[in-house]
Amino acid sequence: MKKRLKTLTILFIGIILTSMVTAGCSRDSSSSDEGVYTSVSELSGKRIGVQMGSIFDSVSRENIPDAQILYFSTFPDIVMALKSNKIDAFPNLRMVQTQYMHTDDSVTIIDEEIGRNPAGYVFPKNKKGAALRDQMNEFLQSLTESGELGQIEEKWCEKDESKKTMIDYTELPDINGKLTFLTEGTFPPFSYLREDLVVGYDVDIAARFCKEYGYALDVVMMNFEALMPAVTAGKCDFAASGIAITEERAQSVYFSDPNIYDRIVVVVLKKDTGSGAFFHSMADSFRKTFIVESRYKLFLKGIAATLAINILSIIFGTLLGFAMYMACRNGNPLANKVTEFFVWLIRGMPAVVLLMLLYYVIFGKISISGLAVAVIAFTFTFGVSMYGMLVSGVKAVDPGQTKAGYALGFDDRSTFFHLILPQAAQHFMPAYRGEIVALIKASAIVGYIAVEDLTRMGDIIRSRTYEPFFPIISVAIIYFILAAILTAITDRVIRNIDPKKRTKEEILKGIEIHD
Image (cartoon, rainbow, N blue to C red):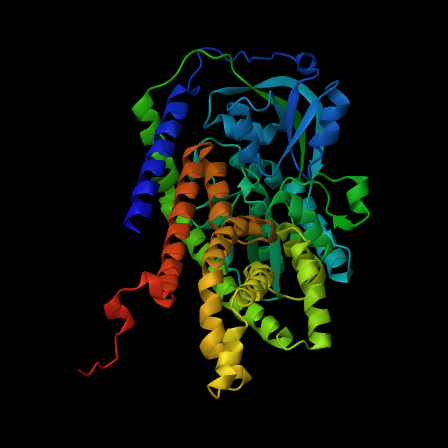
């Protein structure tokens, strides 16, 4: 354990120093607003970053000849790619870019409109969705006529965060029911997390709507590319995150009238004019990542969700794998066929596909949390691995051990549990430890189904700080620590069941020796 911690410490220091050098050498100020590219025509054949599920893919292809389109999951990912020179530019809404440039003066806008984005609220295509759409249209019309809609837009475009106030939707009374509202949560100023509360332009209007019509409101964050599938599957009552209204999308969902009709522009880096202060940059990154708005609490919340998913999946997966093995151990034909098919199905399916299949299809019409679905999915994957480890571990035990058990008067079950399984465990426990580490890493994808795990919290923090390195380094370090803790616990179990790794005193503990 001490050796592992020493290795991790050296690794962490190396990662942090590397990130410090990168941060210290990055652009943090410019003397002019001139960009590396000054017109859209100059981007011909260049690398253009777009967010998956957005209309910026088609807009880029239509307006930038021979554009090399690269896809990213979140807006912070695109920002990080631009600042690390993985892409040359990216299109987005003027409102988003204006907000982004309030906190980062290393980028600028090519002030040429390449399209328009009529965005609104999305509702499931059912009776309730149609009724809510009509109410939302009525509400948006009243906001437009009173001039309040424009005032809300101006407020969320402000640089001063203290001016961006909104009602506390967590206190709205449940008069006509409770609505579940899905939003990205990493897309300022439309939706983002601020002090444990999701706020933003889309959220503000949604909260006002619910207050007006007597609904309680539950706001759930989800990856942008998962919003539309979640709406069509009926996992929510409505959703919004600057979602463009298109004819193709309208075939599967109901759209409200637009709540904004924004310009689409292109963002590029400014011309490099030098680097900033090394230690000041790191201190500022640390402060924004952990201290401002008590963001360390987001990491703690993410760690709790990640640990819950992994620990429960390990426990239930171990039990599932053991049950599958016991059902097949004596050659039951039906159990063998069912288990063989289940193992083939789970092993051949990527974890992210399994997650989405369970969440949107199998449990599509059932009210079940994303965390519960994640536990079920990873219980299946870990259970299949456990079954395979038991099969290989038992095969490694000399068949003569079973005969010896029978000769001693043990029945079949007693022979297995008292003689075979303890010896098999010595063979498969190292692989078991490896599966735990693999599970921890695999669970980082649960943000696709609205689970606020450690990785998702890192994305949320990056969406607020626009710091590409420090949040990622922090998440990496925490994952290393979690893996080290769980593998250390597993090592302790291995040591206790392996006579070769125990001391004479530990082996003889509880045994009285008479001279």
